[in-house]
Image 1: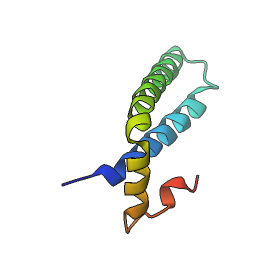
Image 2: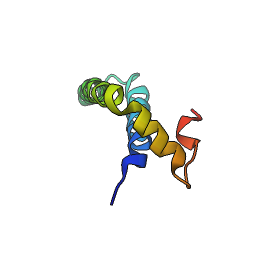
Image 3: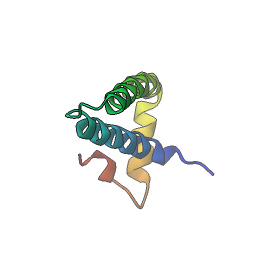
Image 4: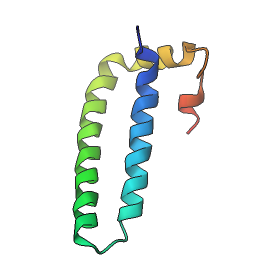
Length: 79
């Protein structure tokens, strides 16, 4: 099964989840929560590297596939 049209949505969902976790953990003083914040921050940076490597070569293809998906259409780009 081809899932090309889901890639942008998956990346957006992961970014949103990580941003929510980071904002929830940013104000904490407990050591394990600070460690978890640092881990999520590092994971987000790594995800940004992966995403930047995917989009230059296939960006237009991913955008076109997302728009042509009859269930999502332009939902992925409304944020």
